[in-house]
Each structure stands twice: as structure tokens, then as C-alpha cells.
Amino acid sequence: MNMEQIKEVAKARGVKPGKLKKAELIRAIQAAESNPQCFGTGQVEHCGEPGCLWREDCK
Figure 1 (cartoon, one colour):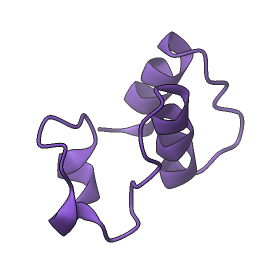
Figure 2: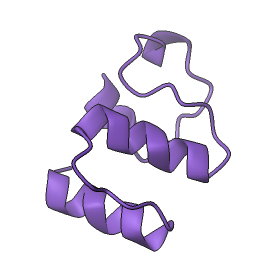
Figure 3: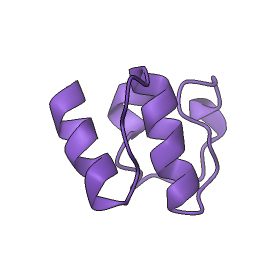
Figure 4: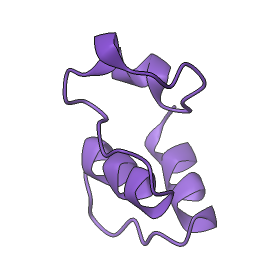
């Protein structure tokens, strides 16, 4: 997913993208959704969320 698409998701979730980098923005979205803020932390191999919107980018 490109940054413009991620920013649209953020706005839809009430997150202000500002100047956040991709990983920071995705983790902010995860927090807004009350999900673990795990994007880009190397936990993808142990992830219990196969339907995560960010899974492909996280790998």
C-alpha cells in the first residue's frame, strides 16, 4: 500500500497523518483501532492476525 492510500485509511480512522513515516503512521492506525502496534517490529512470524490490512507490507 502506498503512502497516499495509508493516509486515506488514517483519515478514515480519525488519525492525523502529519509528517509521520510509513511505519509510524501504520502503528498509529493500529493504536486507533485498539490493535497491537506491531507493524515493522519483526513480529510478523508470530502474528495471530492473518487478515491484518498491513500483513503484506509487514513481511
